[in-house]
Figure 1 (cartoon, protein in one colour):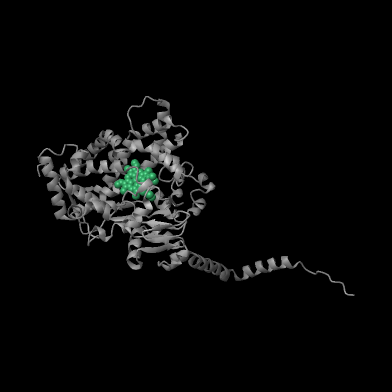
Figure 2 (figure 1 turned 180 degrees about the horizontal axis):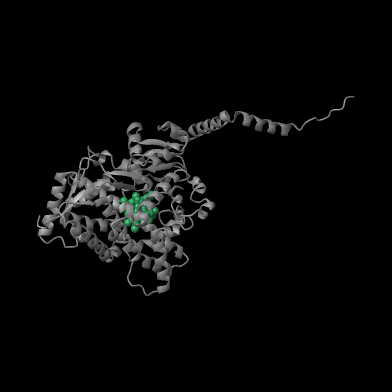
Length: 511
Ligand code: HEM
């Protein structure tokens, strides 16, 4: 009788054979895996019925590339023109163009939560109000931070804005000693927005206006960081390979604590802790400390730092960009510029505009308000999408059913080009706010987001712009160096602009 002897371990040999095959045919296997993965994402998702770029249907590469290009807002406008109101921009993500849909998604209490996109923005160890993705925790932080940001509190801090306005004006006065002097108005508005925030948050300017340049490249660093956040936010798990890589802290020059804005924030925190209650004046930091004192467990010391520090990141580029957009749009339209100056001059001549323009006075300038709103409509300062997750149980949005977990993306540049703003939504035309149904149009403006995540700095930004811009248009004559050219810009999270260069002269205030 023959004896059966197992001669080889068959399972091991299969594995070995597989490894050998992979080593031999890797050039075919790797693309095959990618293709299969792509096809799986493309067809397995309930979103397969929605149109969109081919690359986006099976991978997030389209989103990453579009964000990297710096003009994702233009890509989204083009996508919606081509494919309609709902476009698939990633395997599990849809971009919505309907302003009604945006209102529903952003409405408070509807259960649309922030996606992991926001978690990439620093600081990961202690998220601030913008980066916090846990809704319940966000609600607590926002409750404690809201009071310092209220319009009433902002009015109490208006004198700090005025101090900075005076410094900006003195810089411009100096330039005007020579007639038609060159001025990079865009840069100065940027320095101004940063220094106002320094005053509001920490009772000290960062020094950009005084210096007249980007000290230590701090503004550029913020822009670069936001650019990184925007791109990696599309593929958040990759953050661990880059910024959250444990090896990173050992690399020279990458210690963020040495970064100008962070350094100053840390210094101010330490100073306040030493000073205890004897604070010189009521600024954002002191009020956040007061909120912490009242509820030390709910609003921790780390939250005080994160919220104050985060304000500089969230509030500087955004406000500067909005002011630059309005100035450029007005200056390149001589009829609009003339009409705006006439309104401001008449108010000044009749004693209705103080030397340092006041909020209530500027609210009574309808054409100025229309020019500002129109700038925020056509060129909202946030260029990237605001993304939210559809609640797990699914939900109907603007008449369409979406399954739970779908990511929905809203882009202000798309939403604000809707025909509800008139037949010419692509044109900068402030008059639409005076002749159309302005109240209804207001309901569909998303430049400050909406619902429970409505921009907490909206009051500060509006107060700052309403005080500063009329002063500039009243006291200075600006002439664009290249009126035929658009402003150059790229979207990081915010729309970072350059090229607002002018000739500046002092105006005779009587017109
Ligand atoms: C014209 C100026 C500004 C514009 C256009 C703007 C725009 C926005 C937008 C669109 C959002 C919503 C983002 C989202 O949901 O993903 C937002 C949120 C936020 N903004 Fe602003 N912003 C401006 C100024 C400021 C200022 C001055 C500050 C602070 C000093 C600030 C702090 C914040 C914070 C903390 C959030 C997060 C709010 C939350 O999630 O509850 N912003 N902003």
